[in-house]
Amino acid sequence: MKKLLPFFGALLVVSATAVPSVAQIDFVPEVLTFNTEVGVPVSGTVTIWNHSLTNSVNIVNIVLSGEAAPYVWAWVDGGPSSGVIETGESYTIEVFFDPDAEGTYHATLDITYHVNITIPGPTIPDPVKKITLNGSATEPAAAEPADLIADLIDFYNEALANGTLAGIGRGRSAPHKAMAIHNMLELAEYLIGRDYYRFAGFVLESVYFHVDGQGRPNDFIGGPALGEFQSRLTVLIDALGG
Image (cartoon, rainbow, N blue to C red; front, side, top):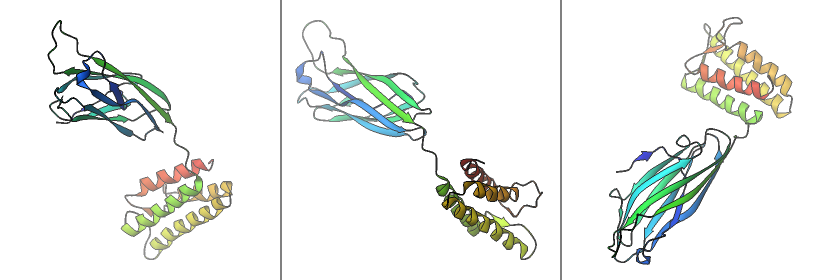
């Protein structure tokens, strides 16, 4: 049975120490480094191999600790569910890094395991391998105004087509108002394409005044998708310096 544990994580790698050589255990890799943008989770897999011909290995415990744990890291046990690695088999762990702020993150992953072998003499403590975990997050690049206006026009056209946005008015005035908004968006796209950001901002602010739900001036469009349209429009205006 898989389990999701909210710990600081990253890929792990280990080689057995203080264990009879007959165990022949490999943890791959030993250091995991993640590089991503804030809000974009990434994951990796660690594989623990038991190359022994005679001895099984028990995974006793896995502990993650370090900066920002358990807020930006998690791990999923890929099994086997028994936690026992039979001879010639492997054990997998998937680790997730999901940073919520720009910066670098470091932690250690401690894997405690037990080799099922009888050794004369005093009991040997189960070995623990510390794995180095590194993560780096950067802020996503700001979207370009040209991309934002193209996405906004696509959203608007799709919303008109599926009925989640529609012109407001009697008779033929409703589709004419919807078309007027479309024409203003295309004018803004033309101006943005020529780096006339200030004039494009004026056009888009006029669009906003006709979709803000205030009634003065009268709104040209309405519908369930109006809030999303307003939000996208505001982001674009801000990107233009409005």
